[in-house]
Length: 177
Image (tube, rainbow, N blue to C red; front, side, top):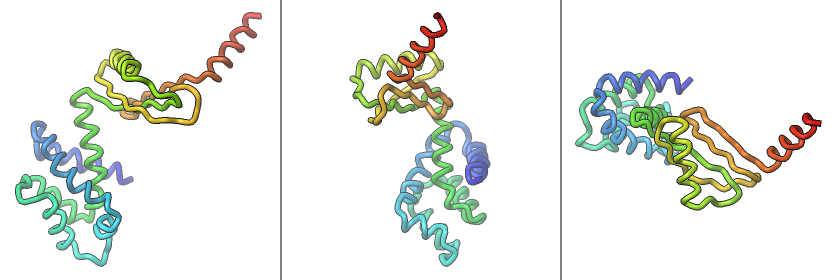
């Protein structure tokens, strides 16, 4: 539900600031979203005991004096509707939009064996050609045998495991007999 509401605010923000200033708007809001990582700050923002005006002042103080007036108004609208807690989700959606516009996506390679830079580069290159976009991968250690590649924003997931290859080979041989 929150994601649907956040999408509407993202759309409105992009229309308000214009296509050329979306990156700057995202950077302004990232500082505020970072503050939400502190549990006490996040609780303060959703607390009904704290006045809306105090919440607004605090968030605008984090945004800084050089904050774009449209961003300041956006924060005021969020506060007016009790939606300041959506800022981290809004930033996440803005970052996805920037990736989409740049045709650049990030993914994860899960593997029990560490891939060297050359192998990772070849995998990035192959996937980039396949999806017709720039793909950057980061590696995460996993417990399972094989390799799993996930690019969430593109809905792409591919996995290769020794067990599955062996099972597929056995099934193929059995069918041939």
